[in-house]
Amino acid sequence: MALKYQITYQSKNTYEAPLKEALWQFLIIPENNTSQEVHQFTFENSESIPCQESVDGFGNHSLKLRVKRPIHSIEFTARIELQKTESNPFEAITSTDPTADFKTIQQLEFKVTHESFLTPTELTTIPQQFHSLFKVDQTEPIFTNLLALSTWCFNYFTFKTEVTTTTSTITEILENKQGVCQDFTHVFCGIARLNKIPARYVSGYLHQDSGLVGDLQMHAWVECYLPETGWVGFDPTNNLLASSNHIKVTHGRDYQDCAPIKGVVYLAGAGSNETTYTVSVKTVDDFEESRSATNVLKQSQEQQYKQEQQLTRQMQWQQQQ
Image 1 (tube, rainbow, N blue to C red):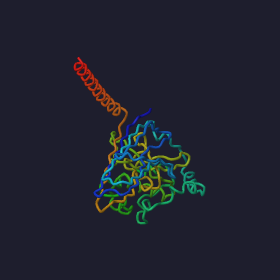
Image 2: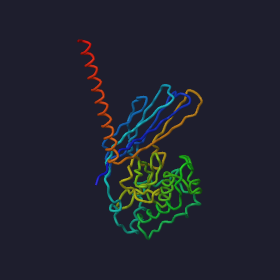
Image 3: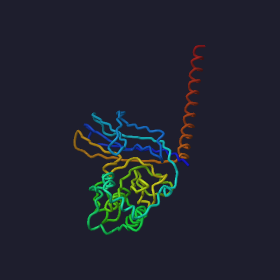
Image 4: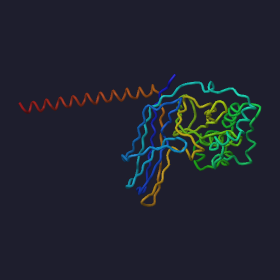
């Protein structure tokens, strides 16, 4: 079964002092893979600045644009139509022997192949004092251990906004036991890598109508590589496997590789600046209702225009008589 989504991403940057020059990069384009396909993508900004698309080292598609004129604010809007295949993620898991699993991840070839997602980063390095928080059981398959890790993260942390930032250390996160999806994801990645399991940070959109918890902007979850199966998505914020509600955009080593928007800004003078984001994810039914309402409005406007044109022609005819 296929689900169709309409996604709207909007951000607004406001500057007290006018911009002198700025360069922005956006990582907001969903990837095309075996479970999802982008049907339409548009990206606009209030200053009509042209943008360039490129691909980074992880295969993520980015949009870059530069401005060199004084402005006090700029708005960005992306609209996406995407089809997602609905399936049971557990059906894709290959049953394996635990001994073979852990033997595979210790092999040199495996380590070299997955080096980027085995090496801890500053945001995913678990401090020594927290190494005993979660223990891997090598008598169980790696997949079973990762399900247990997801449950552990879900129970250990309380989802709470405005208690952490993108610069919060993993020590602060583990000590406070509160945070948002990127914090759950960094800790999950860190513990998986600590136990020699490849883990990559994933950024994307989340359809929350079914009661799932996530940020109001972009959601974050984890993909781990399982021998004999491949990459599998785990959402520790909601303690479930990534499925049809998860729309993948990018993956990388941590948030720094996947930040939805990055900017280098030079201001003409001193002053503060503010960035706001909104993300809307709707299913096809919502989209069709929205499109139907838009069509009704458009038809009404067209009818009004025709009536005005008819009245104008009638007045012109009367004047000629």
